[in-house]
Each structure stands twice: as structure tokens, then as C-alpha cells.
Length: 114
Length: 114
Image 1 (cartoon, chains in turn yellow, orange):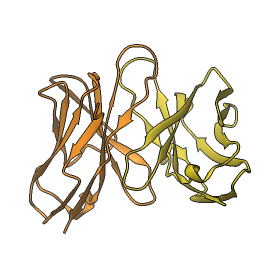
Image 2: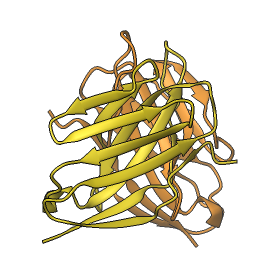
Image 3: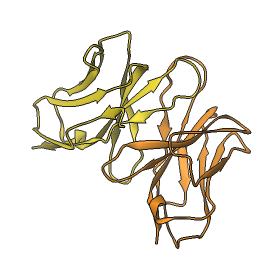
Image 4: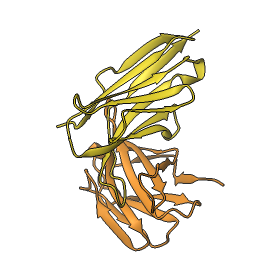
């Protein structure tokens, strides 16, 4: 049973437009959510995160929205740039203290077209 | 600062052979993690460690053993490799203390078991 799901394997967006990546989760015990970005032949790199006590977190061109009642979060990238082309993973964690045992979604491959 | 490094980058094994994957971090992080990533799936936690000399099971620990003899190193062992262990393996490290610290990932080891 997959607790974190990214239902869109791929997304294609024109440069300069908004990219919206979606993620759904089933475990109500998750209280922290993260987005990681991954280029080919590299490890994932942290992008942005949000605590369950918030509904929005913004960092430059990246904004994450959390809808707890729907168990849904989304990552908005505005404006999209060619360097944003990568695989994006949504991840979730439960518990405040100690090691973070992250549960990842399957990933969404974002392609930004010039 | 090299961050998180992994050795080797690639390896091909025959069924039944054994090997050890090495992860090293130079950020003085307390927590270290081993994940595997399979096609169409997100990263799944194999084992993790909250400090030198301690290890714990993650989501998919069967067939793997780990050791953390030194704070900066986290070893993942396969005693008798199986084709189902063909995967890309990522190591990560993270700080302790505070709340929800990000994990820093290595570049990965691509393992093929024939």
C-alpha cells in the first residue's frame, strides 16, 4: 500500500509558465512534507518543505501548498526555467524527534520546453 | 567539503556473491540512511543509524546488513546477492537536534545482480 503517491509520471511545461506538481498521501500521522529534485546520475537534493501546521511555504520561485483535509500537497514553480527539468519526489515523515524515516512518492519527471 | 560520497559507483554481481557498499560523509552528521530506488518507484528506506554503533531497520531491510563503526561511515552489506536486489542505492545523512532536518544524498551506486 503506497502511502505517498504522485499520480503523474511526467509533466511538460513551456518555459516561463507555471509548473504544478501534485502529491497525495494516506497516512494521517505524517506531519512533515518535503520535495526533492533529482537530476540523472545524481542523488536527490532538497528543494522545499512544509510542516503540517502550515498550509503554504514559499522560497523564491518555489511554493508548496498543503491541504490536510484532502491529504494533498502541491509544488508550484513560477516561472519555470529549463534548469528545472528533473525528476521531482514528494516525501513525508512522521514524528517530531529522531531520525526522519522518509516515505517517498514515485516521482514526476518535469520537462521545461523552450 | 565533499558532502556524501558513495563507493563504488557501479557494480555487477552474480547471484550468491557478496559485497559491501560504502558511504562516507564529512558534515559530522549523526544520522545516516540507506535507500534503494527501483524503476517507477520512489526511494525506499532499507536501514538507518542514529549514531555511531547503532543501526535500525527501515521499510525493506531483508537481505541487507549494515554497520556504523565510525560516525562518518555507514556500510551496507549484501551477504548473498539476488536479482531482486538489482537497484540504485542511495546513502543520505542528516543532522540531529532541532526539528525536521533535511537529508543530504550521495550520488548513488548502480548495482546489477545477474
